[in-house]
Image: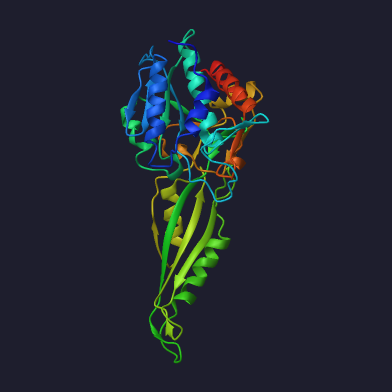
Length: 351
């Protein structure tokens, strides 16, 4: 194997190639070629790539290191070229630099580091995946059945090198309150808008019995409403959308079942696949983090953890507050610190 991957130069190359969700072919090609040049045996499916530890043993636990190489669209506030990987005042600018390029290249460096030294007491797999920003079906979810059994995952996302031991899930609900059409000038019909008001108030005020110790209560927000065809017709339907941020106190399906039992409106979840996640406080990764003085917290933001059917945490260099912002950047020293943190964490991890 060649010398270790140069994380900063690799990140600059990634930034310079457009990699919007579902359009990551260019960065997938780059990563495949770069990883292969370091002597790694790279597997590819669509725009997802993964490498299995060359010393893989099926009798050992397996840890997945995962981050994504897709990005959102650059917002209109950019004052710089989002694809220009400029370095100024210790900052590397560019779309995807913070979310989550810094994590991805740090994990790749970490993986190659452990390929060159005495093996860990567990297997490592590195995966650079697509469509994370849209929780797409052709991202991490599409390769899980192609991987060996995974015992645990570290998902590279910007967390200021704090350990996210729980993460909120997401459901979007389409609700319909039913009424009966009539003329607004006469006392006829049943106004579906009025019928919806009790349910909307319920979504605003309801508190679920169980509260997550790391993520707090489930958060429900009515975010869109639509009703009526013209001013003098009593509306027969009122449609509204609810954004539900679920916690590890309930599964998405359990949350949905409770909601349906409490409201009169018809409720349909667009999907229940983006589940909340969390690990127990005595999990080996949490113990290792405590030994290293790494703080833990519950994350309100969604990642590929939502699609993983095994235990996982979110951890990495960079700041989530910079994700999707104009003139996105990551500090160069954050990448250095991220590599050290990943290596130290894995060295302290025991199953």
